[in-house]
Image (tube, rainbow, N blue to C red; front, side, top):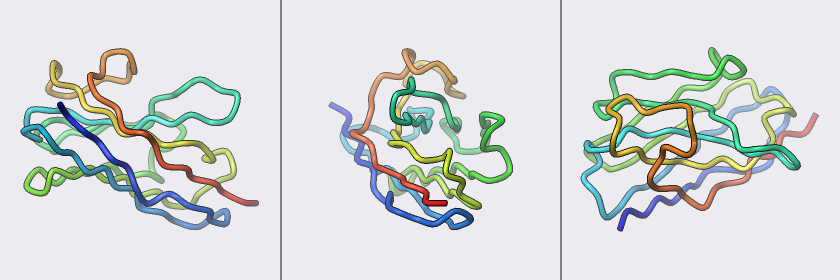
Length: 125
């Protein structure tokens, strides 16, 4: 069983930064492409960013490109999301997810095999 545990969320003012982490256990981390999704109050879960199994290929949703950076430390079994220039509309629960079948991941949430419990990010204006 693969376990994913997010951390690093919090309350931050607009323009600030956070670094989210996702610790994986129970798996060979290099077997998985990884992603971050988020869900704001009253909205559906949406794709944020994905990274390939090797960590060499990344892609982002347009709303965060240039502000968010996804990275992966295969040796430590950890996934990260550096969030810069936070905006109130970034307020959401952020989830990490693992995809065993696709080497580059996907933006489709229903194609991920494992999910963490989420970490809350709240941005005040």
